[in-house]
Image 1 (cartoon, rainbow, N blue to C red):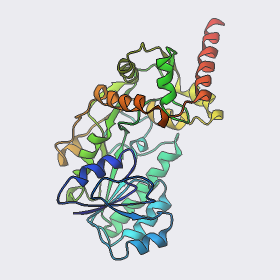
Image 2 (cartoon, rainbow, N blue to C red; image 1 turned 45 degrees about the vertical axis):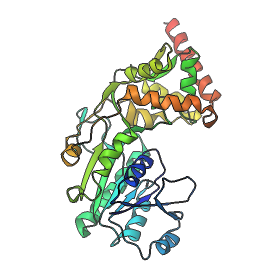
Image 3 (tube, one colour; image 1 turned 90 degrees about the vertical axis):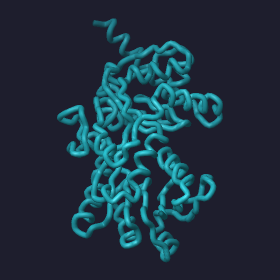
Image 4 (cartoon, rainbow, N blue to C red; image 1 turned 180 degrees about the vertical axis):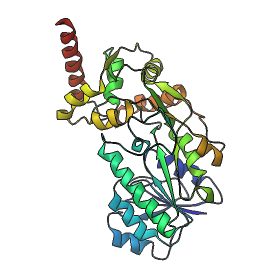
Length: 338
């Protein structure tokens, strides 16, 4: 089986490439700008996907059993892929997003049939537009698409959080270590799924070359469901520190974070502040081995072990740190004035 990844070195795709590279019957190709090292045995096409003519020339004599798109975020990008790979692949697997599901949905239990609509996040609406284009090409022309919707997937270099600054999660970890309160959206009781990227790779690779996946959409998440308070407490336990949670309404965070470039309307109201429980029965029917092998209490320790031993790879964020202090101080003063 010959599989091409567009991207292939990101948080999700890197685990899939590593897994497939170990399989003897799989020839793995990666198309990207060549900025990161690849596992042994993986073939590389160095090109910028935005240069359609160059990519077309690079693949002019090639066909693939599957093309896996990980960096397509807008409709024009998947339209470009359609032009490039029509007639060249037996399957085109598009990474969408579980944030495309209606927020809030009529039910907290999410299936692949849940309505796609997200008025709070442009990112999600763009993913929906990509899905709609691809499904239209499948219905009208038989273009062999499979849509995959990840939720919150993390790896050994990242800590999944709800509220963080533009420089990522590291400052929240520093606040925990310093004994400072950390902001958690809502009252901390909403339900959420976290998936380690190696677990995600099991479900994803099971769809490659699977004829029953053509023309279908699947979300792929772990089975473990946690509240946000439990997520933060698990991180604090792994750090060996006391958690000092400070709960703040998502709407408030959105209103006071926007001028600092913190998109909490999209990331929280449009995603993480809403309770979701994913029904994974559809992916399990095709890939029975898809389950949680790395629960969060183990995965986060793997991540923290890496993060704490590579501090040079992470940047502190004094602006976000100061913003957290001001938000907490203002709310404490508001309590005292009533």
